[in-house]
Image 1 (tube, rainbow, N blue to C red):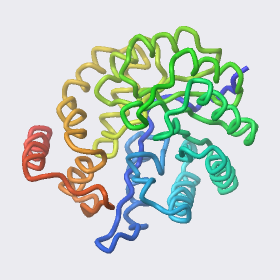
Image 2: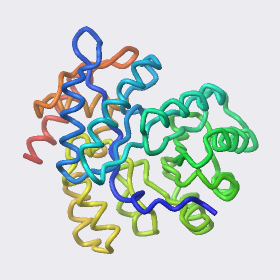
Image 3: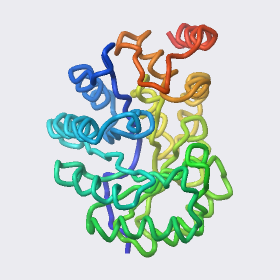
Length: 299
């Protein structure tokens, strides 16, 4: 049976990693951003995911960012850390997941292998091998076909959930409502489903998901967490109201490759410097203009 985690619900933030002009990690800025999340109602913190530009960081840098997140979270009773540990190398993912468990993360987020394009059996064996190598340490599977070039089907995700008790959730970013509904309908008891797409979270909440791993909450944590909480409580009038208020921002966050738009917005808000690591670059002037207009509208 799937491990039960009572705290695993609501809004999680896929944290951006602030960099200085020289490309180094801005530690003080990062810790301040994590504190801002918790202060504004976000208790699930996800360092070193796609939004955190983890693929451009060394292993030591990723461990450092996760350690900082754990240090801040420990100051707050309900805050939990879901550390991004996935890669397209099963053995390397196992090794890194063991390391984040040792430094105090509460859970791992493991993306489906990218570039390799495994079969469904390959996906199953990949996740089962990881789960068996870190027994009793909870894992959230992450399905994002737009970045990995291959989809983990509903059937495979349910099979993984049924056979791996410590794979306790999925972050579903396929955008395929039929697939998502199949997972929600057929999942084992205690298995949680999270949206991986801000813009469709409210309709996903209506079909029974448990939360959101958000990009938008980097910018507006209070509004995003309130939207998710309202949906979980069945208050869809309030959830829709927030959804439509922030919809332009949630969609324009992906006008160029994430997290470049979000970092520009956060720079405009005075939260960080607008620095990314190659091959990502700051958003174009045309995108800046659109984002500024949305910010003015949102005040």
